[in-house]
Image 1 (cartoon, helix red, strand yellow):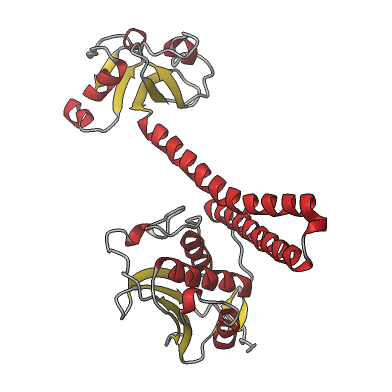
Image 2: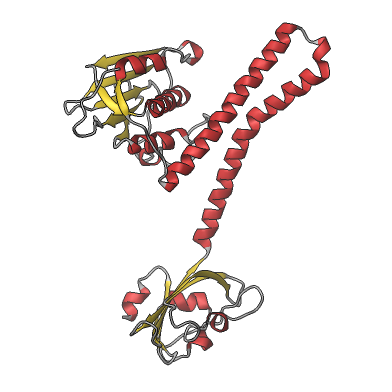
Length: 344
């Protein structure tokens, strides 16, 4: 048993019904900052305290309290050196409501939580930066309009108002993305499927997109697939993929629409950039993932993955024929059983 416990990454300690230690591993001794041996009393070896100086044993009272208790949720305590230790306990009872026959403690450092806190802080900073950028433009132009309204020409006013309108659209989109991320994380993302003939719909979605720097956006198709999808969510997926291809790739972008033999469809977006290295491909669909010098919130591909998953489809990244990145979205037919699909 001690050999097995010593191989655990976290501290582990077992105490019997009499409060005496039955087994302990080296990591627990390190975190408790005291040598522990079988036979030692639990209150003598677990000398952790809260920020007010109250001891873990007195506060938790593992052998007392309500007889219905079986689990003590993870909580923060501090060792003599000031190190924060996270403690979870399991109270074993032979019969429901009976006396505690064994106490199992799991102890670990707070470093993982500290890293998570830092990660959250970085995410907040990223979102704050993305929100501040358009807000700065809105504030600047509105302040100028208010202060110099009579001295500005109509064309100058119109230019400023169009810029404000565009920045407001950026803010609206970012807020929508954040709401979608929350829905994906909590499993509350909903889709309203309808039969959609993809070729005319995808073509109509691509028409108003203006490629930057004289680059070209081309739609190619193989077959004429009709699948059951949420039309608005499809537009969101396509917009994110094309914008990502232009932002992170180089050269022209080609969108392929391919009919699958099983009634589904594939939506493929190719760019002519340097491609995405294989070792980072699994990470590109994670939240706030950003690579290279291109800006953005880092939410687009995460939302694409969530929306495609909500349709029962898959999304992956490959190398395009030109050597750039290829994002392949596979959508099942999605037709409910017993329903004859209509064509839009």
